Image (cartoon, rainbow, N blue to C red; front, side, top):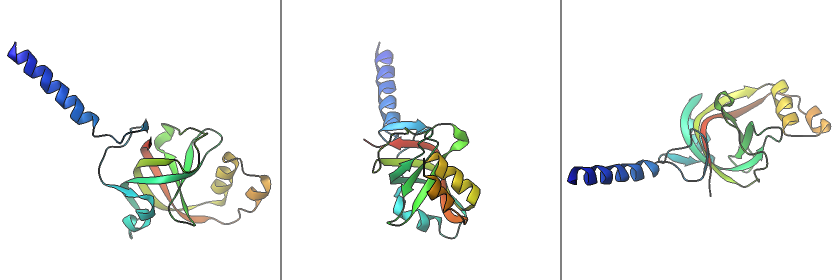
Length: 154
């Protein structure tokens, strides 16, 4: 009887320990584990001279793809945002997520040059006007994030 009680107690404690490893909130994809989360304002510094780096980032949503939630933009400074795509289109975010919503993402930040064609495509998905889309005439150097997991914070 003692062995059964000890086994049950051990299982209960292990369950609680593992449950506390994840960031709390509405999880998507693989979710996000606690630890080493940096603010979105530090992404560029964390990348340093590297082209690509694995990281967990907490930030504020600026916009989400209005077509199907297949990307979002997170504020990384007063003037810049970082596009967040989702690994292998394995999950999407809610299309109606309000600007200012706090999220944590886990994946890879990468310096890229996004083509005019891709920028125009993203603008269409974001339901921008034809006039706004026509103004996109140059490729953009930016940081793009591929998330394997995301959590909308409570």
